[in-house]
Length: 190
Image 1 (cartoon, rainbow, N blue to C red):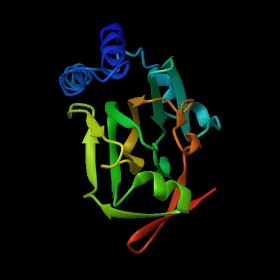
Image 2: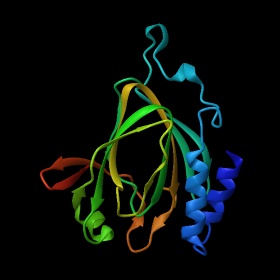
Image 3: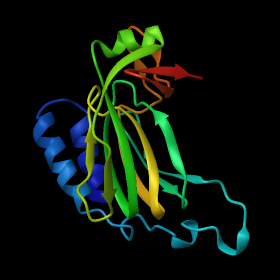
């Protein structure tokens, strides 16, 4: 995990050699396992009928350049359709498998944020398991997505850059939007 943190800093601190550094970071993420993040497997299921939230968030690293976190999805749960505005994302499943429904933005992403309605193209749904490569999202490609646990609980690690705490020049704070799918466009709901 420490090598991933160092490489994330090298990748997102400045954009010199960005593509090469991103490739190295993705390669490191492809090797990530549940042991590397000390996943407590007791968090995966609802033991003895306890009422736990369907999704658990575990912060791993947060700084001005990127955020690394882990999400644990219990059996049958999901993260609703949401975005990472003008952010890069790397998602690595470390336990179980998830279904990802991805949408890519059409046109200027900043205009879409201001309008409240975004035009998108739907990418194919895909099931991603713990032994599959990491999924890479760009500021426009695959950036709006829904993630659901498949056939049991799942856990995945996300690297997002820049972090939500940063500002978007010409817009302001970088909020996470939630969406409702309507035909060929996706509508923001708050």
